[in-house]
Length: 381
Image 1 (cartoon, helix red, strand yellow):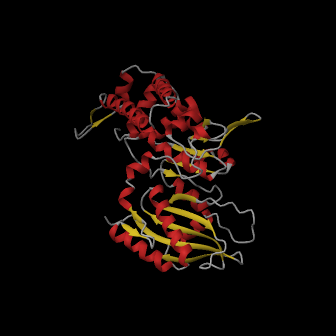
Image 2 (cartoon, helix red, strand yellow):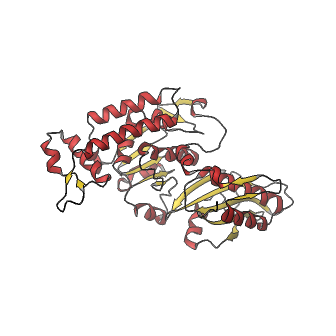
Image 3 (cartoon, one colour):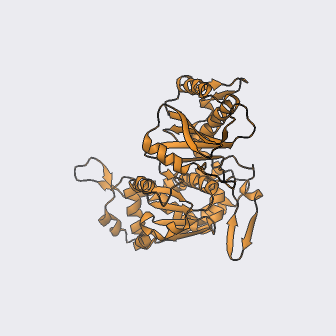
């Protein structure tokens, strides 16, 4: 099975003179995308002994996904003047596990040979056949990484610890999480009943911003959030790494009507225009932007859904897939009940929700507002 999702592969190097260069790519990378990836890459020019390397990271820009796998180089004959390099993949799809493994294969090949020729051969093999082999006969097969697996997975390879195995401790009055592997139930346990605000925001197609000082935490948390509305299976709303000081990055984000975005800059909380819901992962708190207060009035249906999520997330014997499925069933039931209130439109071509019909039901203002916004999000207005 050939891969039509791959767009390009590239190598970024830092040499012994502390210069950072794009030394090779196939095919050529769009200059604007190359500039953005250069800013995201953790390899920076200049002498910096304390440079923090994030081994694997990814993001989205203009509906293209970029994946970076970075490594340090020491005493490697094939790369005598290189101190660090990053393998860059640009694709059309979200699948971190697939592209982390492919990047790792390219990393080993480049480390062994110091030449992009082998990478090009492997890249073309994946493009045309969907698989490739290394000199050691290790096989990469794209069919082993189905999109559904990427959607259900909520972990990036780290130190192998689950959230329950990591240390959660108090410093003053702030709760800090050290997160290496996160599931939807972990997300619910972090935010507790306030998860209902995140759920409602995703369901109503609103703008959500997550903050954490750690890139790895943002990657793990944000990728689990679209699971809250599994019936849509849309991970293109995910923008896990946005630079609040990069206008190109911000403009690309705000060009979309709704999103899930991650920031490492705490000051983004002051930029209310960027979000309807702000979630601070470090302290497990969720806040509503002033302009969105009316949208997030809570009623009985929200309370019931919140308690369902919190209680089920605590059940250790329940798998995350079961939780996602059961939550999806409850969401679909809500939508189906809403469809039961729809009436034919003027030209009788489809059924829609009309505000005056909702008002005839004598619902609370919070429920009426929520249902109408849900109808709009589901294309029933």
